Image (tube, rainbow, N blue to C red; front, side, top):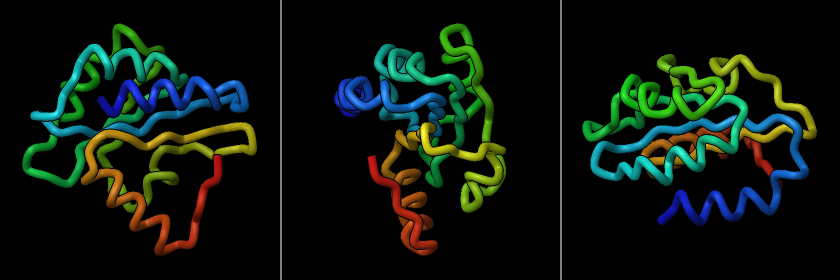
Length: 122
């Protein structure tokens, strides 16, 4: 499963980062609660949103699932086009923002990064 592979990869690179943020949006039919909780526990702040799809899992549902396990969980309901500004974070050299979940969400963010020539190296 994707969340398990991502978690293993992040464990190998996380010692390099001070602040760790997660942006997450998933589909109702691609939901793996246990794996999702384990991944989310690795981050100081988790932002949840709805991918652009009729099948999107409501962010309120993610809040209920993750809140008992993660210190800070927030909903990003504003326009994902401006996700960095809407998250209210300034990433420093020792910080990481991981965006994961639905390919609808990832594709959308990737497209925006390419449009602005913003590339991230890990």
